[in-house]
Amino acid sequence: MSQMEQFGEELADFLRRVAELKSARSVPAGDLSTVLDAALFELDHVADQLWPTFERLAVNGQWDDASSDRDEQRLLRSLFQRMPLPVALVDRETVVRRMNFAATGLTGVRAGYATGRPLTGFLMHADRVAFRTQTAAVARGEGDRSLNVHLQRSPGTPVRATLTALRPGAEPRTAVLVVLQPAKDHEQQRPSVAWPAPDLGEATRHAAQLDLMDAMTSALLAAPAGDGAAVLEAAAGVLHGRFADWVIADEGAARLRRTTVLGPPDAPAADVLAQDPAACPLVVEAARGGAASLQVRPEDPDAFGRDASGAHVLVRAEVTSLLCVPLTARTHGPVEGVLTLFRSGARLAFSMAEARAVDVMSRHVALAMRRGVRPRPS
Picture 1: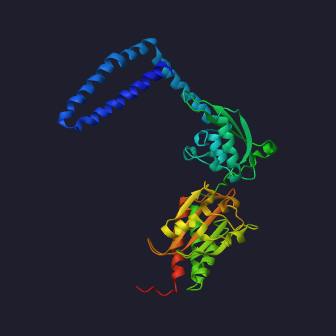
Picture 2: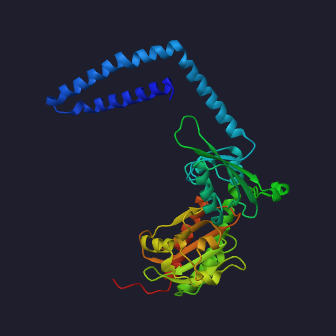
Picture 3: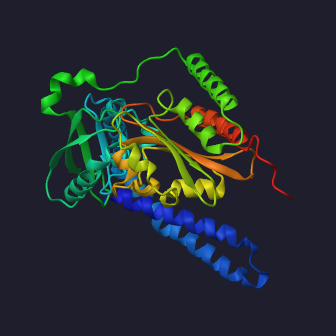
């Protein structure tokens, strides 16, 4: 550690002790002499230690060196951000510390959102364990590694991840630099990365939501009164395809009963239909607590339990975002059921605005399920 760094640490410790002395002003009057002795000791420390060290560093020109180091660090950060290759700096647990502009464009995730989250959360479930293992090995100093992974944003395009150990500055722990490039077999297909198609802006999205809510209202009014399962089936039919790849409807609260499962063509919808909704933590939580859940790139594969074949539903359905909402006519009212929506593959994740629209529609569905049902005796 350089003299400049040692001086910085001593100065930081001194400032913390001064803060503690300030907070000691409220001690009883009988103890003030002890606080005064500590304050005099700190003043002696400044006069005998910190000030001579400051003068020595100033004479040797190390302040100018420190300023030069800061300028160099800013330059290196700028170069990191402007590199044409997608690059991310992660720790041994794959938690993102930095991500450059090219990496945010490739993954479709803003750097501010990615920082502090595992990079594995942006990969397909099948690649996460291998990526964690290789990253940990590189961080342990076992040499550079390289492997193919698949981003949730474009699962059909393999990406070559090259991992190399890096020691940033004077930090005690080794970080891992991750470089993402198209795999050799797909280099000619580089432009085929699934970039989001441009739309007409907020007005277009708002109009699409209005059309969806209009279709939902029409379907609920046409559903037979007093038949909750039929109401759920009608609501699921409106949401499936145009709004979500998967729609799963469960009726009840204390005793959940799965009534409808709609998925993509050739999807294992029958296995999900045979699943016990009581074994789905997200569904049970929504039914009991009445709180909606919006998850983008869900990290826990057990969040929706396993299907009849024993496979994780979220993994088998390749879920990239989900909405799980209770069906209740009013806040803190009785829950009539739970509606779960999945999006998978390259489809854009559910937004907060879409979650709000589904929350409104869930109340309408709950009202339709209660229509024609005799009120419970008080």
